[in-house]
Length: 108
Image (cartoon, rainbow, N blue to C red; front, side):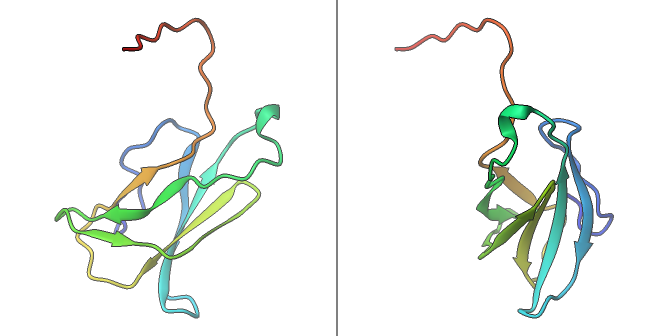
């Protein structure tokens, strides 16, 4: 994601969007608000941990977030104030999607 342009450069599908990027909450952290449109009845009232707590910037340096939050279809990811090289890469940990249809898995 490009913090400067507040734009998601790649994602799993069009249901995940950036709603807002904010600076400096009371704990001196920036935050990113993602929207996730999900109307699947299997996911109603299900809690997600969308992203891993570690992320990296364009230089390849890794950083850690110490908190996230969610409310309805919004998910906040907090990042410490740092001099990041944009874009940032966040790693998806839990994403509500399903395979519909037949699949073949090869198990060794």
